[in-house]
Amino acid sequence: MRKWWALFLLVAIPAAPQPAPLATSSINPEIHASLMHDYTIDVIVKPHAGDAWSRLAKRITGDGMKWKQIADANGAGDKLNSSKSVHVPLRLLRPELQRQVVESIFPKDHLTDSGWRHVVTGGSGIEGESLWNIAEWFTGDGANYPSIRKANPAQGLSTRPGDVIVVPTQLLAAAFGGSSEGQNASTPATEVRKPEDDPVERTSENDHVPATAVEAVAGGLATLTYDRSASEPYAVYRLQKGEALYSSVAIRFTGRVYAKDVGDVLDRIVKFNGIEDVAKLRVGHPVKIPMSLLLPEYLPENDPARVAREQQKRESAKLAKRTRAKGLGGVRVILDSGHGGRDVGTEHEGVFESTYVYDVMCRLKGIIEKKSAATVMTTTKSSDTGYSIAEDDALDDAPNDQVVLTTPRYELDDPVIGVHLRWYLANSIFRHAIREGIAKEKVVFISLHADSLHPSLRGAMVYIPGERYVQGSFKKSEKVYLARAEVRERPVVTHSEEESLQAEGLSRDLGESIIDSFENDGLKVHPFDPVRDNVVRNGREWVPAVIRYNVVPTRALVEICNLGNPRDRALMQTRAYRQKVAQAIYDGIVSFYKEPEGRDSRQQTADSR
Ligand SMILES: [Zn+2]
Image 1 (cartoon, rainbow, N blue to C red):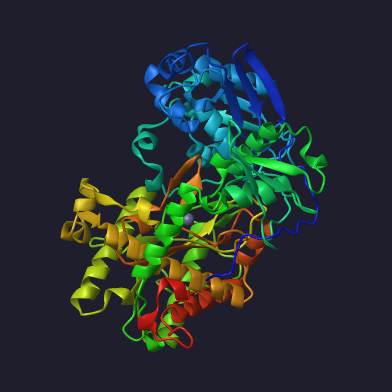
Image 2 (image 1 turned 60 degrees about the horizontal axis):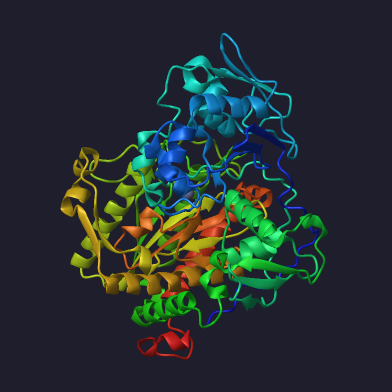
């Protein structure tokens, strides 16, 4: 049995995590908007009595069909509960409402001949709204931020209150005098993409959360009591000395890690408890947490959801028969540096995920080849520098020149296509290995990333494919895919239930081995549940596509650290740390293939671990 992760938090300073909005305004009696501390604009709409989703959507967005996007944004089903206010993404509002919202929140803004003149307001820490935020509000898409930066050459990536940013006319959404109605609404691309297909990590949600956030640290055992008779059942947790509500409750018990999600959950808990000032909570204060927010492992022992999850874990562990491989003989390691080329991944303060994880991958490849008998294959490669290891601490900006090594190669123009080609390629490598006579348990797939989470979080986290998300068949049939041999070889991917269960078990073992060696090597590990079988974000759960559609039974996505945290970010910019990370992952692979101490691996069962 693994050590119990969720433990006491020793938090130095009780911080006020989610203060009142920076600005709030009423557009009309039913629409209110606030500028939140993470510089998102939250628009809240009060439904009419007896309203239906489509009617509300028609009134607010001009298009009844947009109801689904609004319902999704609220994590709601097809039936609107008209007694509850709903959040509506700004970009979905009718143009005139968008403009009213923005003008009321930023009264100094106005339209000029060259474009929209935005005056940075700030109010949350030293930095003001990010260029991403600004691009999102005025052009409808945060990804337009490089064009805004180009138009304001003196502007760095971060802003300060009082800075003036001009958004050029040709970029503006219709609401702000631009010509493109299309940019106003969500682009077709975002509509057809499922969240699990979207590898584009955007920093906007996590930028500018107060940098004073206290680091979340794990400690002792969590004790919850439950009240299931209430109209909304809840658990009660008593705050310990020095614990902050967001880390002790929101992050720990609900599993949220993204800044916006942590904020949303915190809002909900604050309201649910009628807490007036989060900074004034005393030690021992009973905090009620709606049970619908809890991670399954924090539900009562006999709760069906918890029972089902534990059952699934046991079954997957039973099927996960590890193989021994001394010196990694006969092992094939497929390494995937999660981004590259024009796909830069997440970016914080000029630290680009793609650049740094590629360097870690090259180091890891070097270690495996030098110290073991395993063979290494990669999904991407730099056209210019190959796998050479950087000699600098801080590395050059992205974009780089990595390509996906399919036949023919893919230049990584589109990150989503890139992700699908990565797993198609991995699946092809896997099939060839099997044909060569390599046991399927001797192939390992590791995708390397760096995270963009709430700034209080540090350290490594590993995602593995939870069985319940890996089902059915899937294929890509667009030209760009079928042009590649690895896709044509087998366009359709299918996972049987048994395969998915076995993959979950083997992958969990690998994930735990890697996390253990991070700890043994003195590297930071995520304080709560560092091995996770799904991503939780914006009220949705999924498994990242690169491991979801992958057929290598033992596969994991490693988030090396949290680039949203200043200390992790500083570490990433040192060679020594990147080398240590590569070594720790190598040690994790080695221990995964090592005979468990004092045991015959063939007898190994779920109970022994
Ligand atoms: Zn990534």
